[in-house]
Length: 266
Image (cartoon, rainbow, N blue to C red; front, side, top):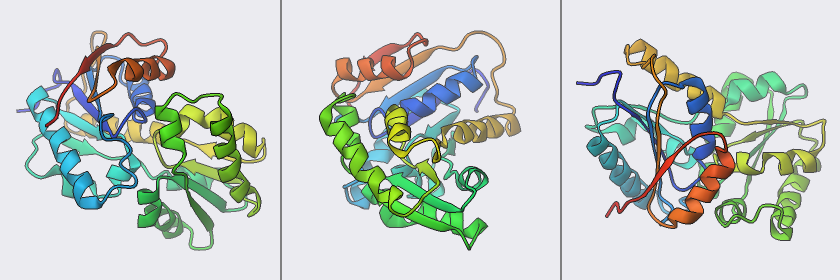
């Protein structure tokens, strides 16, 4: 039986979901969170679907053991697999990443929209379909950005390699006159400032993490599972490179006190 004092799980293929955890932590300050990043096997983007599904099931079983009330799938690559197909017999509630279609359309004056995501996510066409389902006249340019995740996971902030990758991908948007961009990978908010600087002030960059956090809150409210009192705790688990993961967590969550743990999913 689920109850309000149980923690909330947040999972990702690596450190990207920390950007979602940041929004969740702000919106739900009394909740306890357990974050799980599969840093031993990241990135998931280039992998086959069957393999990715097996990894996700291992993570969800981990959260069964942690007795959580809700798991936020803080990864677009995993969300596009279909949250309903991931839930299976797990008793906790499950919510995936918002595609941000309404947000990006509201922000776009020209309805000329770019999507940055992993190869896997772009290959599904999910975000383009979501935008066109609302506005069939919109123009959507999906661009796979395979260089970003390894550079972010490798802490290459401010490096020439990262700068070159940002220019490579943003130039593709500029040539098409895109006026709004959605970051459809949770890693990309780590370099949102660099992307915004490369695109210029006339392009709006959207991070759907806030809308994802609101969706999680709605589920908890509907199920009467919101913890309203006390100061929540944050535990962050990685499957490899704990020191590097903790540095990246402190980079994204500088004002949040966290504990860290190295775990083995196999």
